[in-house]
Amino acid sequence: MIVTLLKAGWLNLRRDRVAQALTFVLPIVFFSIFASVFGGQGSTSRIRVAVVDEDQSELSGRIRAGLERETGLRVRTADAGGARLDRAGGEQLVRSGDVPVAVVIPKGMGAGFGAGGFGAGAVKIQLLADVSDKIAPQMVLGLLQKVTMTAAPDLMMKGGMEQFEKRAGSLTPQQRVAVDAWLPQLKSQATGQASGTGDGAAAMGVSAEIVDVMGSNTRAASLVSFYAAGIGVMFLLFSCVAGAGGALLDEMEAGTLERLLSTRLGMSRLLLGKWLFLAIVGVLQLTVMFLWGAVAFGLPLFSHLPGFAVMTAVTASAAAALGMVLATVAGSRAQLSGFSTILILTMSALGGSMFPRFLMSETMQKFGLLTFNGWALDGYLKVFWRDAALWQLWPQVLVLAGLTLIFLSLARLLARRWETA
Image (tube, rainbow, N blue to C red; front, side):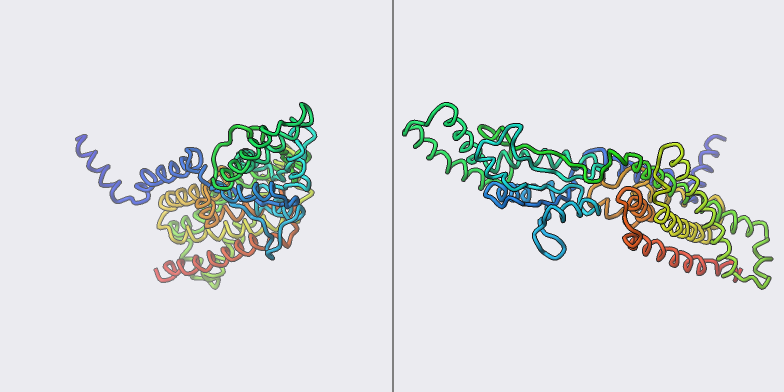
């Protein structure tokens, strides 16, 4: 009897493709995503960084070249028009989210380096950073120190010897000859190596400081918007799928859908009405989520109402349309629940609803833009974190509005099976 039950269970599993995917495929997908992010593969992602060289000295040129050779960095030194970046341009790239860090080598760095500027009064390299990315500024800071130590050991030794002579007296002719003979060897070693760990006279490095250009110390509550948007969008998808299933599949099983189609209403108007209701409920759902964030966690909702309203409208519309597609393609409630769970959880993991996309590798970040969640979250972060103007939301609004039209058209096409049944 037990053997018979086992055979029956195996036959049911073989016939149920959704159950197979939930049992075997979805765990592997989630394992792969989390392992690539937190298991070490995500560390291979190249950090985008802008380099602003205000000094234009031999030292700054070596630092810039060393950063460009680093395999962990993707260095940008020019603006969109090809002109050399200045401080304002580098800061704007950080504010707009194009790069998480801009390295500014200030004027006087080369002169101060040679004059022994290693202490508290030294000219400092500034790292203009968006500190919502906790990893990139520290990674760039470490690589900057590494590059400095390997790029200019001869300049470091020269500056150190100048300081020695100021405090301990001039070198003897023999010592001067020895130093002058050693400096070219150090320079040749520095310019000939791609990267490495510095040693010897280069161990002092340069002074650097991280500057938070986003002002997050006074706007820490804006980070709550990421969690509100991420969780809100994920559960919005679940509620839209459930609502669409109840609106169409339950009516089909109860026989009321056939009676509705026999009236003058028609399938197009029926789908449009169901979609509009789901979109309105979705707007209310996201509004309640963000209102709770404002009341309980200080999310600055009321100072960002126009951007919030635009993003919420297009996000809820697209989510409702996707729910209609999934409901029209499913044959039953159980089938809808199964494959919609797989789709929504996968999109949420790749799109950033579960953890920030900047933790992912470059390839996974690009895959995230293939998801509904990725575009919606990017829009909300533009509104609440980057204080973007309404017109700057056009990429996210355009994509989500386009998805709405595509999903509605697809749902109408798939719904023809009920008209011909």
